Amino acid sequence: MTLTVDIDQQLGGFRLCSAFTSEGGLTALFGRSGAGKTSIVKAIAGLMRVGRGRIVLDGRVLVDTARGIFVPPHRREVGYVFQDARLFPHLTVRGNLLFGRWFGRRSGPDQQVDRVVDLLGLGALLERRPAGLSGGERQRVAIGRALLSRPRILLMDEPLAAIDEGRKGEILPFIERLRDEIGLPIVYVSHSIPEVVRLANTIAIVSDGAVQAYGPATEILGRPDLFPLVGRYEAGSVLVGRVLGHDEAEQLTRLQVRGGDLLVARFDAPVGSSVRVHIRARDVILATERPSHISTLNILTGVISGIAEAEGPAVEVAVDCSGERLLARITRRSLRLLDLAPGRPVFAVMKSVAVGRRDLGVAPPES
Ligand SMILES: Nc1ncnc2c1ncn2[C@@H]1O[C@H](COP(=O)(O)OP(=O)(O)OP(=O)(O)O)[C@@H](O)[C@H]1O
Image 1 (cartoon, helix red, strand yellow):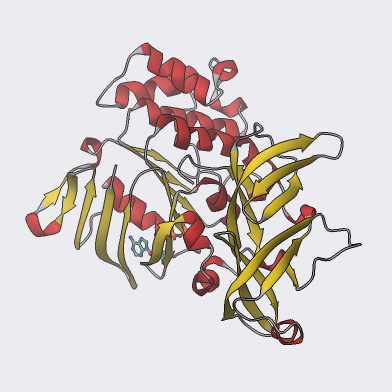
Image 2 (tube, rainbow, N blue to C red):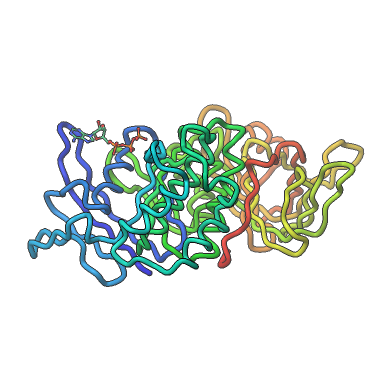
């Protein structure tokens, strides 16, 4: 699946001029409020016309202003999940799901309903009405309804925005399953780094109506030049690790990454499976000798591959850990006192408690 978007539209005083390509999986449109993410999704869905542009999904031209092509929304075969679930209050969960199925142009067999119910864990909810469901349950029904219209692409516009922080973790695994088990391309709007870190194969960074950069998630998130757009607090690197084991008593999971082993907060993933771990640059300390007698459990080895200016007293130091890039934010003063420079071997130190449940996710298959 390939999605190509290249659009230009004036919206009052705001100019949307965005281009990106996605090769399937989950593509996150990440950016601050008002950056233009929803407008891009609306253009893909056909809910907004553009003055100039071209949108092609898997070889099918949905929009081409130069050739006068505009496929109407109901012919695009897109599923749309909004911030609020927008369920029919008078219908049960089953009724809402079946509505999606009848609404779709390519109505599927009954097994399709069973599969979606199973995938989204909706079995126990089928006879209930939306008013009695939690926000997360309602969103799962909305996703199921969208899936049953058998779309060629699923557009999700901040689907977790209306769900409280604690409950978000209940719905993220279902979105991971959509990404990995159904193989349906997803465009996912978010302004939350933890969500994007967990879910995205591809990230397009949207700012001031334009896509400033796009590419594989691990690469885009690790680029210090994009940190001002990502937000320096959350900025860092994404490593891919293999689960070596769990310590139930101490509530820790041991991961093997390229630079060594990491102990992180207990994460429910099978031993041997691949997970993504987000490590904020601000949580990494560098040392030129292996530290001993400290409480930190995580020490990775690597070689400094680059140093970039950050704001104020800080610099971002990139450490090559056997081919994986880890970023550390340290003071310029420490850089000078430790005489750190590209090519110098270092030990990267981080606290296990700095890597919490929200920083861990199932790695997409090709990570
Ligand atoms: N029909 C319109 N007329 C005028 N301005 C518009 C219109 N639609 C969107 N805008 C403006 O375009 C900008 C981008 O809006 P958009 O909703 O796409 O941003 P967003 O990144 O999705 O933001 P949020 O995360 O807050 O939803 C905003 O400044 C918005 O006010």
